[in-house]
Length: 353
Length: 103
Image (cartoon, rainbow over all chains, first blue to last red; front, side, top):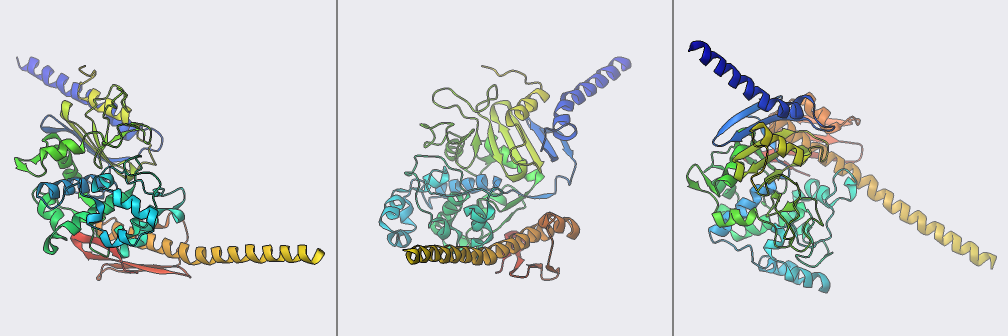
């Protein structure tokens, strides 16, 4: 009996190692060119099943860069839940003086914009999001390194229009900072500098840093910081439809809205980007014509993505959350391959159709 | 006729020269300022918030380019990066609000 138990235990250990070996090789030992993984945590069906830290540990703080956008989206959702604003609000409600002073064409464009257009990167502004390619002519570089001294949103709102509101998707950090400024304006003064902690970080036990511009608007596009262990909680929030440890953080309605295909991407699905997009969250959502960004990968895959390849991947239907801390060169991680390996390591080889 | 053609070319030459001068002045002032801002902000984040150490953070922000002047005030949690044309300071405002550029 003892021998039987020994071999059973041994074989299950070997099996477990083998399960994650392929994934570990891909992440740490034989990565694709340009990939550097510093830490990785895999959660499945209620517990962490695998983790590995090449640099730092679960307490290490990270600058989230664009993953901050998803937190900003949650904060906007909470503000709506609490009745401070509506994402369907017209922009002019918050910037009447500024829009009134604009030249005629620009005024017409800005008068048609809603907060929701910014939430879904569909403001139609002629924005330049390049970093490395041409940093000295980049709106985003100028915004982050020059305009943060003052009022970032007013800088973005000087941008002329390129497309009609809602017509095209264009990934813009400027759009995020505009709705973060709207959020600030919608709140009583005493809440304007504390709401991310009061509504989100503290109830979830997250130790975070969130930087502001000179006017007190949180730089929601780029400058939130969180620890590795807390990144997992972002995934749990999606998995539990806005609840964390039984506490309601964001309404289920808002979570559903945020992880569904942008209403402005329906007609030009996968034409302006290779993945689908929700409310500041990347998706593998099916287009209306049946096309999907990553074939054979569940279409409920939700991705929080930040500069350097850091990410949180969530697949609610498979109860999977994967946190990856990385220092990749641009787009080095093949997301379909990575997701399929995550599933394979957990013994999920084929999708249930 | 010769005079007219010559005047035309002189005007074009002056025009192009002025444009280049204007562009150079913009580049000479804007680019070094932007570089000092990027370095100050990134170093402040790397050193004071992410606590990665002075050598690592300097290497990270300079990315192999030469450094002219750098002043680190650990007590005031402040860092200044300067080059011959521009200088920028970044400081930790409050731990939860991170770093902010001061100029």
